Length: 454
Length: 132
Image 1 (cartoon, helix red, strand yellow):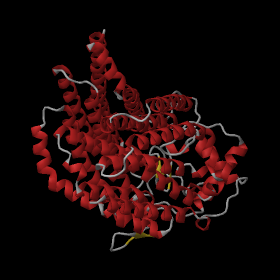
Image 2 (cartoon, rainbow over the protein chains, first blue to last red):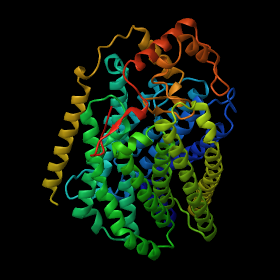
Image 3 (cartoon, helix red, strand yellow):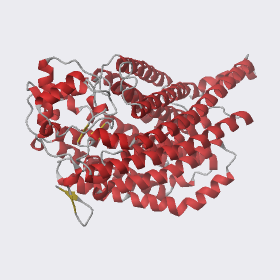
């Protein structure tokens, strides 16, 4: 009887679908790290792998793996947590079809890069035909999220974040393909304006899914739902949404686009100072709460992400001031910001969901994950600093040393690229250690679960 | 905060966002399309060869190679053609036909005509904004 009950519970549980997303995400994360290190090597030894895996192939492989690690794991976390909030997911089958669409398309995307077939746009560097199954998969996700929620009043803030994140992602994704219409691509400045408008907002959309899941997890850990229904939570949510919609202009300050794009983006971006102020104000209490919950692995990842939210937001606000952006634009400072956001914030938050959803109990597992976290945190800081210094040197060249050839300036950056490669290797080692530990602990847990059922 | 207030704020934001988006999409903000011209074919080639993974246009793109927004002004067509055909010690040669090289050069010429990418020409205003 007990076995039948356990099996029924397992069938009712949404975990198995979300697990597919998360496992695929973790494998893609390993790919992203591997391709990232291979790409970094080409900065230190220019021309290496030129004939085998040249940079125009390795970069999209790295970027697409990283983007799909974020998207798939975010979908997995939302799917799992939605099941916990709403009782059950509206359609498990729809979620499975979505996963098959994603998994199949990602394989085709990576293979097409190897064969030298590109769409050639930042983020989505794959052939536009492959954008269709991704869009269909997202529509299925959107249907599942809306149908699972059912009631739209008196909902906590994370439900609002999941709904708006999922809906706006579809809008911005379709917007990023407007260039397929000839009249949209014929003017390069207009094309780049719309391209970066969509990308700037799109990042905000997946952040909505991730931060929403983060708030859900914090509620779960603290066993207190007060915050997610509070006025402050909703004010911060609307502030985030406002920035998602209007602050993208800092990507294109130096383009000859209409001037109001600069003014709107500059003004809107400065409202992020409120977020920064709040983080500083609550820092002490956040740290003491972390100490209280120090035994919880998820909380360690949440705290690591908290630190990187502070550092990345500081850099983002500075870069949103046009007078500073004119120096940082086109330099490695932009890369430092991206790495801080995708690894420091997104990946640590996603890993906090993974260790919550997957069974990672056990002293050895705990110790291995914590070691990996500390190694990656230290390495990420060196990695970030080396990119910032390389960016400062390039900014100086752009503004004051533009008579010096590009190749000579790049040779001058070599020491920072070496630091970037070494710290990148350590970062990859730390993060890979975490991922491998999680996957093996999960496999072991599954085996034990199956043995208990039989 | 009541649900009514939340939905009102959300609706206001959505309307403003859509208004701003469609304002930016309007045809008056861009030059007319000519999909048969050399520059458009060159743009497609630029994307098919994924040139943006190493090169930037207006500071946006990759970091391994130089920004090519104004390369047409600083090099001769012959020099650009030689770079595209043979590559460098870092960049692979793309083995383009003469027609394709012309298309890519036409694209670079069209970008060059839109403005200057180098940031050192900007004036910084007291309020933190910039203008050329």
